[in-house]
Image 1 (cartoon, rainbow, N blue to C red):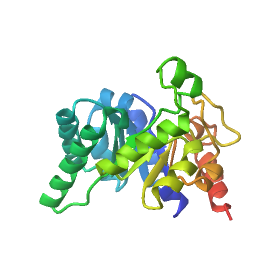
Image 2 (image 1 turned 135 degrees about the vertical axis):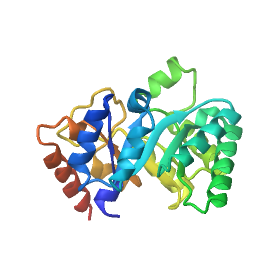
Image 3 (image 1 turned 90 degrees about the vertical axis):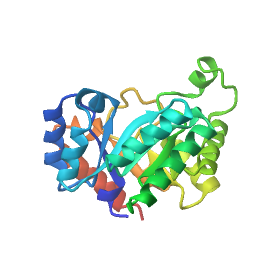
Image 4 (image 1 turned 30 degrees about the horizontal axis):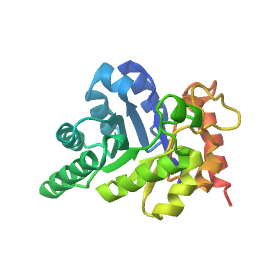
Length: 240
């Protein structure tokens, strides 16, 4: 896959003008932009409409997590916005994910449209093994929990999962080549870790099985953002 189609550029800002500036600066280099909770809460659906007007795709990263009926209605709303991909929290359970997937499929068929990709968040990359055990009282190993949640997502009809780069290899081996893996926590060797605890370089993440790489501050906060993106693309191109 073309590196430009693999990289999802995160619009980790809260102001509309800042987000549009990033989109305009990178629209010749990036195919998919991520709209997360900070930006969506600040400016609403109009940012999605503006990104679509540039001919680009949106990954709506709101991590829906609620009772099944509410999440199903949220999935319907996301489909009506025309997003390329959005996510739910797998910890919401099987029935929540199943209803969201079924609602999405039904709406897409009725309107003869491409079904948005629906993916499930397993464990946030800000959570490490100690936090999983001591704060969340989950006593199994991280990869065991991720494997369990990814299995629930696949059985519920989701297209894939959001998983840390270090979990990607296990998820790919377990769930096959057609199960999408979207990885945040991507940090080139020259970038800071910020608040991520489980990270890998772009090259290593793809080698481990990732389909899409979500990258934000490592590019947008760089003194030469477009140059930073090109360095990452070169790294991906040189996988061989």
